[in-house]
Length: 114
Image (cartoon, rainbow, N blue to C red):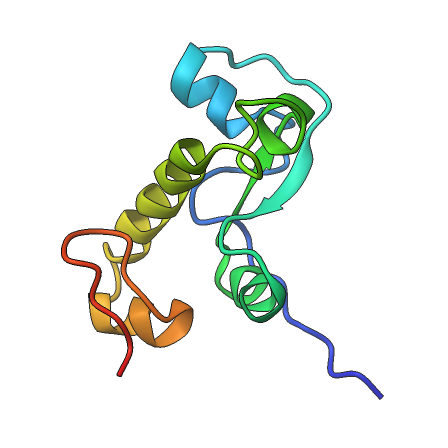
């Protein structure tokens, strides 16, 4: 039987408010809208780590997966979220703690896990 992952709340936003994190950040748009759960550090090994550590935000389809602004299509927007999330995590943890979880740093010199 599969072990159940303990989901944590987002460390960046209150996801109960259905607002797109990037709409708020980049456009000042705080309206509630259709949103999807985005795991900031995605891919097979990091999706579960994002769930456990609260590395996730709400994104509208335009910023999540549709079009050129979507984090899955736009490396710049993807890196904005990765850096902001790491900065927030490092308010209560060390960079080494972060790298131990994700495998690399998105801030500074790109320190990688040995």
